[in-house]
Image (cartoon, rainbow, N blue to C red; front, side, top):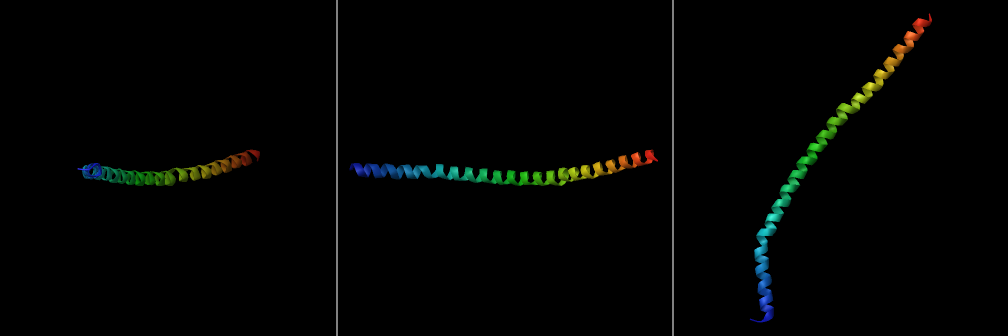
Length: 81
């Protein structure tokens, strides 16, 4: 065997033995992508939950503050009479 034939044979053997490793890596990447998609969707649901519950509560607090201010103003008006 010539030296280039030995090199080509070595490259062919390395390529054949690398196929299962590459397939395992591809499968691992797919599993991780699926997990990432699940976590992304869960995070989006959490963001929606926060937006629906806490932003609305801030708006409610603003309304209650205005009502309390109005009640305080009424008390001052009643006491002044």
